[in-house]
Figure (cartoon, rainbow, N blue to C red):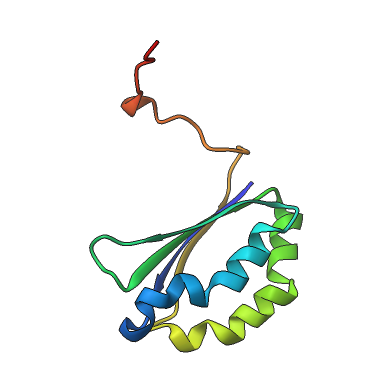
Length: 110
């Protein structure tokens, strides 16, 4: 799978509304057949920073994402709300879902 994490620094005056601002892009991306997940989180240290964790089935699905109409629209509509260019980690891994974090295993409660 293609695993991507991106950090978005949002202008302070838009930070509280970022989920709404990015809603169309988020909904459309999640509906792509090759999208495994597309999740936003807000930093607890910096309320103007959002982290996007997304995954796509394979290279073909990742290419379809960046070539989609909603991606092109987001390239125009999202940057005016940003304080800087987002930073990204993009890698291909041999996995197709989340793994358990064994170091924090929760005992079964029967």
